[in-house]
Image 1 (cartoon, rainbow over the protein chains, first blue to last red):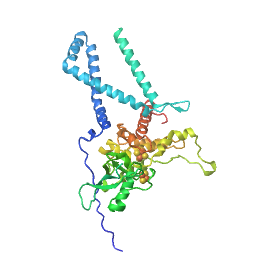
Image 2 (cartoon, helix red, strand yellow):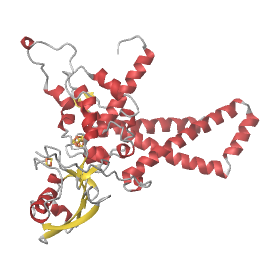
Image 3 (cartoon, rainbow over the protein chains, first blue to last red):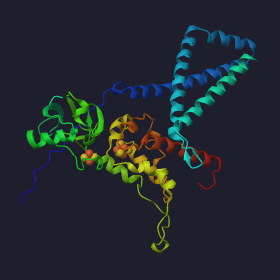
Image 4 (tube, helix red, strand yellow):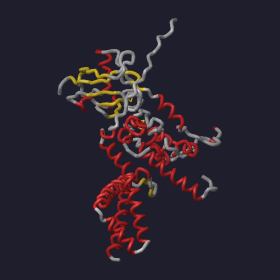
Length: 135
Length: 247
Ligand code: SF4
Ligand code: FES
């Protein structure tokens, strides 16, 4: 028997274009959500700066407020808020996928779990608003 | 309804071409024909050299996965009429090296699968005399969804993380690990956790969610991975708080 002919094994590996994430809406959202972590980090830094200014006394705090009212900082903070909301919403939508809650042997429907997370969010936000308004 | 439809089929013949080309074939458009029937028509009547995989024709064997009009699909469960008037573009599964025409190299997945011990792991095991491992219908329900996987790899094809980083263990393998973790008869969760608690394991997943949308069997691999992450996080927390405690 003759040797089998040498097989031409040259698998083709397509290159991934840099813009692969524009192909699909869910990919775009995924990239935006990854990006949102930078803004989450910025919001933490901003908060820490605020607390530090507060600890340094009234004059420092006023200076901080003036700086924070500058157009660039406001613009950055508006963008940050938008990304924070995206981050929070996608996070809450994820909760039912990660948590399986059983009540009397039945699985709690995913919508109820996400709904609970949103309800808690609204409640905490309301509490903060009340604290700020009625202080 | 027109009586034919055009299939635009990706061809790659490594002995002749350095990259894939597209060849169009006119095939009968019949109400009961799946994309796979169209490909079989091409192979039987128009060009016998067309290469692709298939076996069961009923969504069970998981071998006929291809990219149909940009989406990962089982070609035996994807009907031509749904794409009328056409054309229908048929390409190999994305994220895998192409061997020939519509045949991809699945070696990477076949290597990863056994790494997660997708079988029931028992510490001691019991003797035959002691009888079977019993399970209630509720215990079965805990994992039965994840046991529906047919290893079709559509989820790998849909996953951008796997596309960018082939070291990622990937959706189906992790979902299968969960299938056994959640099985009341299994004792291998710790072994699997050690294997999957690294950046190429569960933490490689960034929850794009496309795997769950692509899955033809409703396995929800994305959900399985998120649950796994929660378990892993709680476990690390526990070992941090109680360093000497049992796992
Ligand atoms: S999880 Fe679904 S898409 Fe992935 S291999 Fe299994 S059956 Fe196919
Ligand atoms: S041929 Fe078996 S799943 Fe399609």
